[in-house]
Each structure stands twice: as C-alpha cells, then as structure tokens.
Image (cartoon, rainbow, N blue to C red):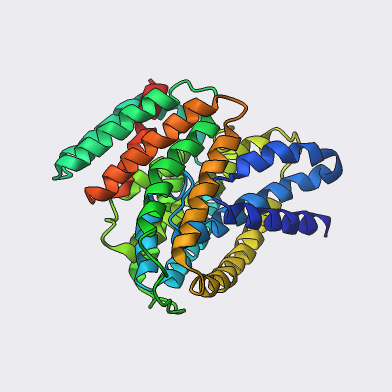
Length: 393
C-alpha cells in the first residue's frame, strides 16, 4: 500500500511538470533527492510515477500550444496542425494511445529477452565501436534522398549549431532547454500570434486502423535500439523513425512518436538490468538507490502509472481544450513566449545567462527558417545527431 501511495504521489508531481514547457523530470529528480530520507524505498515508485505521468501529460502543451521538450520535438508540428484543423483531441488521444502501446510492447519484449536469456550486454559491447559510422551513414542517406535544398541547409545548419553548443558542454540540460524551446517552440508560438481563437474543436476519437499497431510497434523498436546507443535519446530515435513513417501520414506518425517516447523511458529503466547502465536521469537515479528492485513490482508499477496517466491525459486535455476555445489564442501564445523565455533565463542563472540567451535566439532563427521554407521540423534534430556522432568516436 505504501508503494502505491508513493506511485500516486509521483503521478501527481509528473502531471504538474508535464503541463509546463521547459520543466523536465531531471530537474525534479535533482530536487527530490532531498526527500529520500522521508520516502525511503518508496522513492523508486515515486520516480516511476513521475516520469511516466510527465511524458503522458506533456502532450497537452505539445498538441495545443506547439511547445515541445526534447522528447516530443519531432512530433510537435503534426500535432499542432491537427489542433488547427479542429482535431486537437484526436491528436492527444493518438499520442496517449501510442505511448501506452509503446509501454505494453516494451514490457512484452523485456519478457521475451528474459525468457530466451538473450545476451544484450554482449551484443551492446560488440556494436558500440561501429555506432558512429552507422549514425553517419543513416544521416547521409536521409540528406541525400531528401530531394530538397532547404532540407540539407536546415540539417547541416542545425548540426553545426549542435556541435558548437553541446559538444563537451558542462551545462548540457540547461543548454538543451534553450535549444529546443528556441528551435521547436517559439517559432510555432510566434506563428500562432496571427490566430485570434483556435478553431472549434471536435471531441471525438479517431477510427481504429491496424496501421496504428504497426506504427506503435516501430516506435517500440526505436525504444529498444536506444538501449544500445549511448548519448542517443528518444529525440534522436524519433528523428530516424520519422523518416520511416512519413510526417504526411499524420495520425500514424503521431502514434509512432508517442510510442517511442514512452518506450525509450521504459527501456532506459530496464537498461539497468540489460546492459547494466541507465539511459536517462531517472534511470540513473534508480541505479544510484542501491536497493534490490523486484522486476515484477517494477513492471506492475509502470503499467498502473501508465493506465492512470493515460486517463488523466484524456480527461485533462478535454477540460483544457474546451477552456482554451473561450480565450483569445493570441494572448495564450504571448504568455507562453514570455514564460518559455523566463524558463531559459532562470535555468541558466547558475551558468551564463547571456550565452544561453544567444543560443536561444539562434535556435529561434533556425526554427523560423525551417517553418518559412516548409521543411519538416524533424530535420532540425541533427542538432543532437552531429554532436552524438562526435561523442561516440
């Protein structure tokens, strides 16, 4: 019962962090270490509830406002487009549906790995020296076959920007906030200043298609692959997956992005068992607890947290969407432009505010170029791919 209480507490915390752009679970993890003496063994379940709820609820600002974090950046524009067509609730449902299926598929794969006693660690060690060449080849193929001059420009420009700002950067998380808010969030919010009110929203569920399952499965595979790629997060895997499921197929694309985001987080935790290292701030925190983790309890808590978080997402998004239709959308966009700028400034006070504001403004410029040239936003993810390749060499 105590574990369930801590799990619910984590879900409540993750719900609040998910609603606010720029607030990441890693920030809460750093603060929550102060409460370990009070939470004791329940801290593990608090962390699981928080991270699962955060990534579910974070689709609300992504869908309705177009303000992503580093995990939802590639999906932000397709989701926002559905909202402007009056299908914002469908976008939320598809995101949550994909996320839930990503968790289910991920857990199924973990069971298969344990039943077959597969040597994931050995495979990981043999693959690691070849990763820079694999990523470089994939990136080269994507650019060459993009059939667009501006795609190459945005990809290379974003990559150089990423290398300059992120490679061996001591304030990595802070800089990421400035980069992703600037590149993916502010340009869309600025574009939304032209909109006085969001179109009338239809509260409806999309018709089920078998292709939804295929998209969610591909997203889960992306989550599995992330386990083998040090320094590669869900956002980079989203980038590569977006080239397999084209963004013009909006509904399947959104499902795949929802799936890979949560599958990545689940596998980042299970990586503690599979390759003896975590793949996220939350996973590292769990690994540092020095407690015996029961796999059955871990899986059960993830399933409970995802079920509750999915229900909260559907109810809360409906409530917020109906309220937003009564408010001038221009004012909402302006508020979040100021709020995101405030987050960038506050998060960089410990480091260099001027430097991060410059990074923020450059990010806005690249994002605006991407929107003006109608280049898919996912190509800006090379901002992480280029420094990742250098890191792995």
